[in-house]
Length: 377
Ligand code: SF4
Ligand code: SF4
Image: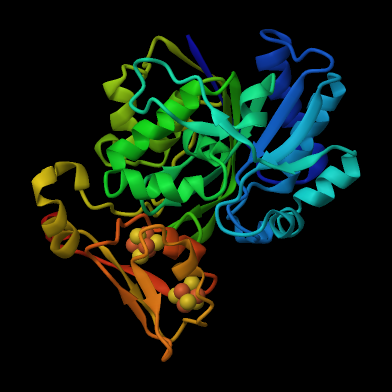
C-alpha cells in the first residue's frame, strides 16, 4: 500500500505550516518508522540558484525550517544540504533564506560534495553513479522539492529533486551523456532515487512555478502540500492533479516500464483527495516528442524537428553564464554580444535557459512541435 498525504495549505506562516508538517510527521513517522535520537537527517530542498524565495525557484525556507524543527523535536540531527546547479553555494544559501534558517536553529547547512559510488541495483539502467557521500550515508533523506514545470522533463517534483545529490559539474556531464533522450534521463532519475537510502518527500506546492520552469517560469499559487515515502507515485499523483498527460511525462513512462506505478485500491490518500484539487489551467510546457524519433534520425531531428535555444538580444546582459554552463560547448558569445549556437552539438539540455539571469534565452519551436500544435487546433 502506498500512502500519499495531500493537504490544502494557503500560507507559509510558521504556526499554521508547523501544524501541517507536524501532522505529516505524526502520521508517517511516529506511527511507522520513527526518527531515532541521533539519526542524521539530510534535508534536501531544491536550491537551483541564488534566488529569493518570492521567485518560487527554490523551496520556501519556511518548509525547511518547520521540517527541521520536527526533526529536532524527535532528537534527530538535521543537516540542510544541496549541490546547486547554477550558482556558488554560499550565495545560494544566503539568498534562498536557508542560511538564516540554519543560523536560527543552530543546525549545519552544507554543500553536497565528496561523490562516492552509489549502490545501484543490477537491474538499474546505469551501473556507475556517483552521489554525495552525505546523501548516501544519512539515516534518512527528507526530500523537500518545489513544485515546478521543467522545460526538459515536463515537471520537477520529488524524484527529479534527488538529482541534486549528484555533485556539482557531474550534473552537466550527465546532461551531456544522456543528451537529447528524456526517457534515458528519467531512467537515470529513477536509478538515483532507488540507489539512495530511505527518503521521505514533502512537496512544496503552496507557491509553485508554471510555464518556463524550472528557472524562468511564472510564480503560481496552488496552496498544496503533499508527502509520501514513495516519491514516484507522489509525483504521478501530482502530475494527474495538474492534468499532465501520462505520455507527456518522461518519469511516468520510465516508472511504467519498471512496474512502479500503483493504482487503486493499493494507493491511499490521507487528509484530502486528488479530486478536491482542480488545477485544469496549470501552464505545463509542451515537450517535443523526442521518444518517438528513431535514433538514426538524431542529427536530423536535432537540426530540424526539435526546439532549439535562441538568444533574445534585447534582454541579454552578456554575462556569459550560458557559455560557462554548456557541457556540450555548443554556445559562444562573440565580442558584439551575439550568441552563436552550434545546433549539431547542442543536446537541448535547457541548462543555458535555466542559468540565464535575465530570461534572454528562448526555445524556438521546431517543426515537429509546430506540426503537433497544428493538430491540436
Ligand atoms: S546550448 Fe544550451 S541547450 Fe544546448 S547544450 Fe548548451 S546548455 Fe544545453
Ligand atoms: S546567460 Fe543570458 S544574459 Fe548571460 S550571456 Fe547568456 S543569454 Fe546573455
